[in-house]
Image 1 (cartoon, one colour):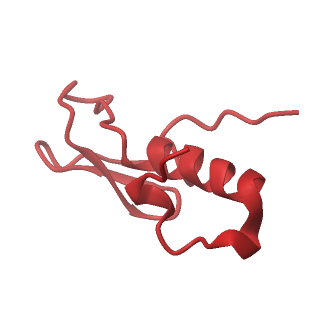
Image 2 (cartoon, rainbow, N blue to C red):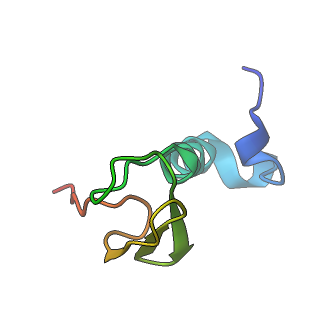
Length: 73
């Protein structure tokens, strides 16, 4: 299986499960997000749980890796 750019630095000692989990979280974090105020795709994470739109300046609190706070379990 070819390795993606998102899991560089995770060698064999971490195992496949950790690499897959990290890859999923990284892909979710870097995906384009829609601003709830202006509907542009310029929403970026400023820090853990803080999201700011680069188009209109709207700031919203959300989840650490996604704007919506969905929990598993």
